[in-house]
Figure 1 (tube, helix red, strand yellow):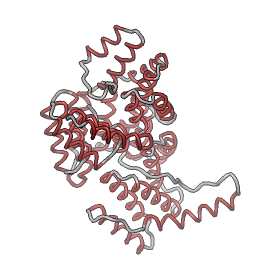
Figure 2 (tube, one colour):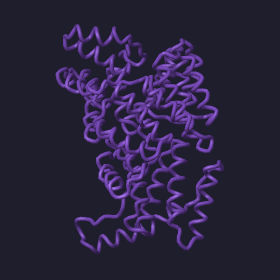
Figure 3 (cartoon, rainbow, N blue to C red):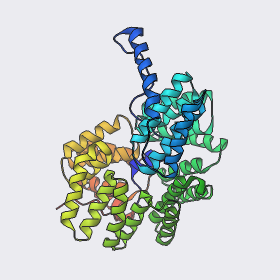
Figure 4 (cartoon, rainbow, N blue to C red):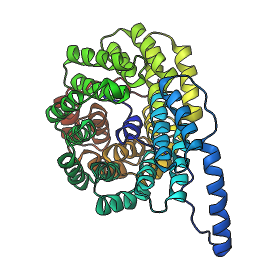
Length: 427
């Protein structure tokens, strides 16, 4: 059992941004056009970031306070940076990516006022990371790590390397981050890396350190690390501890969607489909990513609510390719629907990220499309790091079986004692 992988990618870096990057010269029009473009961006950015926002929560009030402070300050650079990260906090809290676009505009404005600002560069790098532009983020992260060398710089570098499947390089960056500043953020990264390498016990130990380093002053991060620890405990079969830890996560943030999703999945594993549906439905209302809708459809179907499940799946089909193409490809392949679409989605994803889960999605989609030899190639890369994950093992068993590898199929499916609810084709 694990959390949404897109959600983990978006959360572990802790920062994100939108689609418009720093001003650059265009190919047509020369320096004059570039200067005009830069001038327009410099004028637009402050208007965008200072536009009034709705909401009356703690983070909303901080946004309003910082906006007013930026208006009043003669040198607002530090305030602009703080406003950018506060927009990020709002995006994490609300699961609304629009706030990342506002954070991006803060980076644009800060760089226009202070060219070459390392603070703007870090913000932009995290933006690119959470846009899943990992290759574009890498040179920024390397520049920061080389020229400044703060713990957060190495954290960003490790993140973008990890998403590209370069775990040895990521481990080196994370170790430097940990050496420079042991913290919740560095411990959480170490835990995830250990989990990816198949060391579940080590992942639990590292995430326990992250939990110990958490604070109510950063409730969202505290909720996150407790939820992640609960997912590891659940995977390890320690269901009582997993429930307790998930409950702790919800004391920090009572409507925390990842924790609600996890609790729902635990209920579903216990055969309590009605309770599971209620939990996952609330989580999905808060964060309607494809993995949430997929889990909700499964829970509804388990509860005998086939019509409601079909309605949720219709919503998933409408937005899945845009919201999270990798998970949507997995869904299509699992349901034996539109296999070529699933293959196309994973091929596109692989151009930007080449981690074990993208290779797994590619293998599963290719297998459903009848391309077993190609599927085996990607499956080998998906299993290469030793990641212990039920979905990976199930896919391996099915693909090896289709390839006629009876021994590999048996080892994958039986020796690993796999149970997973999202793996059978829809009847």
